[in-house]
Image 1 (cartoon, rainbow, N blue to C red):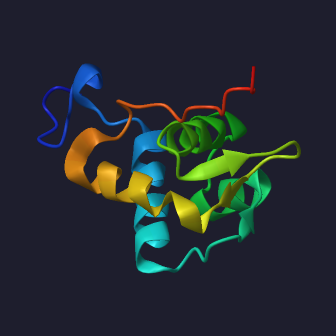
Image 2 (image 1 turned 135 degrees about the vertical axis):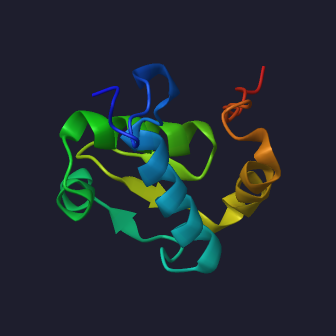
Amino acid sequence: MRDDPDYVPRRLRVHPSRKFADTLRKQIADGTWAPGTVRRSGELRRRFGTTPHVIRKTVLLLRDEGLVDTRPGGGGLHHPERHHALEMAAAGTQGRHRRRRPQADQ
């Protein structure tokens, strides 16, 4: 393996969930994934040809960036009011912030 010129040590490899998240992030940015469109995890799994675990990690990455909401049954829902999160992600701050939940009135 190490004689292979394309060999990359495991610790330096990018996890497939990050690659798929980049692809979906670009689709949200360019409008290919229209606001309000539901993507099911099974659909994403077939499209990327990967396991449910990898798709779950992908969706969780995007959810933590505020780009999608998860819902029972799998997949995510893109919300148009979250474009500020996409701008932050494009600026290189993805994964450093979490969506805040509204606080109940006291």
